[in-house]
Length: 362
Image 1 (cartoon, rainbow, N blue to C red):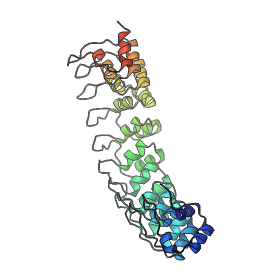
Image 2 (tube, rainbow, N blue to C red; image 1 turned 135 degrees about the vertical axis):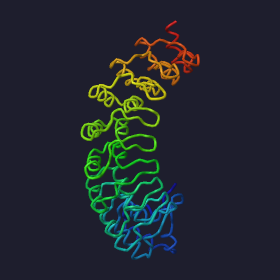
Image 3 (spheres, rainbow, N blue to C red; image 1 turned 45 degrees about the vertical axis):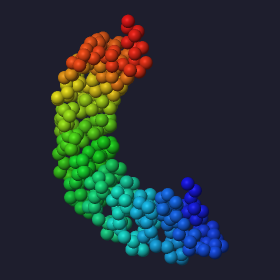
Image 4 (cartoon, rainbow, N blue to C red; image 1 turned 30 degrees about the horizontal axis):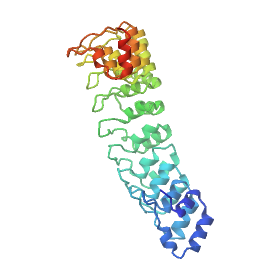
C-alpha cells in the first residue's frame, strides 16, 4: 500500500521538501492530515519512528499538529520514538508534556516499548517524566519483565534501583522474569535476578516449567550451568506432564543440553516421564530430532524401551512420518511389534518415504 508523499518525506527527514510541498499545496492542512490508509500512521508517526526530530519539531510547532495523535492501534509518536530508541525524539516529545503512560492497543506504554531495546537514556527520560513502571500489559508483563527478554543489565539495574519490587511479578501464565531471561539466554540478566531478587531457581510457571527447563529447551548451556551449578536448580524436576529437563532437551533436539545432563549429572538414559512412560528417545523420535536420536542412542539408550502404551521410539518416529529417524532406529536394532492398541510401527507409516524403509526389510 502506497505511503503518502508527506510521510515518505518525513521518514527520510527531508524538511526542505516538506516545506516546499506544503507551500505549494492549496490545502496544506488536509495534506498534513493524510494518513497511511491501513495503519493510520501520520507524518508525526513516521518522523518519530525514524528519528527525524527536526521534522517532528516543524510539524508540531510550525504546522500545529498534535503530538498526541494516535494511529489505528492507539500508538502515538512517543510510542514510536521510544520503541525505536530515538533519544532526541523522545526528549522533544517529553518536553512538550505529552502523556507518558498512554496505552496503545494490547496495553503497551512507551516505557514498555523502550525496554524492548537497550537505550538506557530513553528509559531514564521516560521514568523521569513520570512513567509508571508497574503497569502491566495484557500478558501480565510490566516493563521490567519485558527488559529481561532483551537482557540489558544497565536497564535492569536502573529499574530495580527505581523500584526494588519490580521483579516480583508473573505473567498471566505464571512466568517470572527469570523464566524469560532463561528462555532467551540472557545470562547477565539472570545473574542480576538471582543476586538482587529473591528468586527460587525452581519456581514453576502454570505448566510446571522452571527457568532451567526453559534454558534447556533453548540449548543455553551457559544459563543451564548458572542455574544448576551456582544456584542449585533441580535437573530432575518434573513439569505438570511429568517431563524432566532431559525429556524437554530431547524433544527440542538440544544436543548440548543433552550432553551436559548425561555427562555432568549422569542421568539414567532411559528415565521415563512420569505418567506417560516416554523416555528421552521417545520424545526425540516423536519430533523427528534425528541428531538427538543418534546422540541418545550413543549414550546407551535402548531402541526397544516401551512407554505406558507399549510404544517404542520406532512407533513414535513412524507415526510422526519421520523417515530418517525410522532409518536410524532400525539400524540400531529397533524391533517392530504391536503396541497396546495392536499397531505396529510399519502400520503407522503413511508417507511413502517411511513405507519404503520398512519395505526394504522384507
